[in-house]
Structure formats: structure tokens, C-alpha cells
Length: 297
Image 1: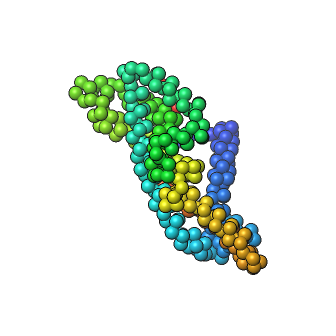
Image 2: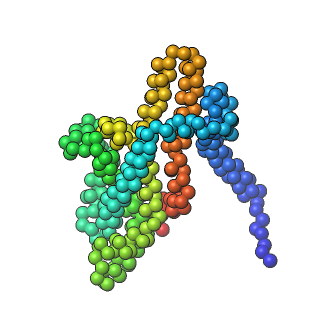
Image 3: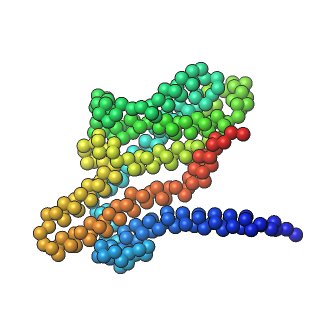
């Protein structure tokens, strides 16, 4: 027979308070999301009059159809998928190739390299020098400008380096070297198979960063067929506001304002939907990877 441990009054009070606080925090996060989704699925008139809370009123997909009919929306999505997938692969390769040697105690000069990398986290040349360098390299108005300049985030490299140091036993390195394995074989056959949590964390960080990338495209891209979804959606909103400004009939102005208000919520849903779909699959790795190396024992 299992015996239950009797909790003291203070323990019960702690658990009740803890669950109440977590429930409150969950509602604070969940409510805005449900509100935005409900607004995007409601009739524009209901949205404009403020009658939608967390449940759609006069359910309709007309606003979605209006936004997605634009060919630039499809182009922006394809570009964003390309930037996010190719960019994340480049990020992972560069980050791992940098973090692995810096995690090895037998790598000469690793502290000097770490100081150099840390320096770049604190000091930068600024917007104009960066623009001049990118222009000199011939990357302006090309897909590479969305992939190469941010090929590695130093903070993510430090996370990967810490994970390798605290998770991979040095005895495994020594055993592999005795068997004649080189650094490439050790990295591919030992380190990477044991590093699924941190790889999932880095993939999530980099993919979300590419998906939400807005400023780089606005600065360095000129062709509409190279724009990502964030820039395309900004153009869509600007076009709606322009139509409102150019409309003379008051009834049409009112209708255009309602459509514009509903379109804002549709655009938010379109932007966040892929991340919401991907995150549950990497969430368990994300928690494990971000916590490993936080404490030393």
C-alpha cells in the first residue's frame, strides 16, 4: 500500500499560490493570442465596433482570402521559407564549427578567440559602416544579404560551447583519439549525435530570427521579389491605408477602415502561425538544452 506524505499547511499554501500564479501567467499569455485569432476570424464590422473578445463573431475567412490573393504574399512566404531554412543551416554550421574547437581544452589560444568574440557583442561599427561593407562586398539587393551577414550569433555560439564542455565527457574524446579518429570524425560521430537538445535550441533561435527579420530586408533589399513576408505584409497594410486616404465616398471610407482594422489581425496570425506550429515539436529539447550548463556540479 502506498502511503501519501501529509503536506504541512505551509506546503499546501505554497502549492496553491504557485498554481494560482502559473494559471494567471498562462492566461496573461493566452488571452492576447486568442483575442487576435478571434479578431482575424470575425467580420470586419464586428472587429471595428469592438464586439470581439476571445470568440469570433460572424465567422468569416474573407479577410484571409483578401490578404492571400495578393501574389506578393505567396512570394514573401516562399522567400521567408528560403531565408529561414538556408539561413538556419548556415548558422548551425558556422556556430558549431566555431563552438566545438573553443570547447576543447587542448585548443591553443581559445581564450584569446573568446575575448575577440565577446568584444563583438559589446562594440559594433554601427549602421552606416555595416551598410558600406555590405555594399562593398556586392551583397546589396541579393538573397545572400539575408543569409551571410548574420551567419553566427556570438551568444548562441557561447551556449553551444558551454553545452559541449559540460555534456561531452573528455574521456570520450580520448577514447576516440586512441581509436584513430580525427577531429572531424569526433565532431560528426560523437559530439553532434549527443547534442540534439542544443541543436534544437539553436535551430529555434535562428529560424525564429530569420522569420521575424525585418530591418535587414528593409535596409538592403530593393526588389519586391526578394522581400520576405514581414516586408510584404507591411506593404499590404500600407496599400490599405493608401486606399483609405484616396477614397472619397464616406461609406467606402468606413468600409475600408473596417477592412484595414481586421487585416491587421489577419497579418499578425499569418506571421506567427508557422512559429506556433514548429515550437511544440522542439519545446522539450528547448527546455533541456537551455538549462544544461546553467549549473556546474
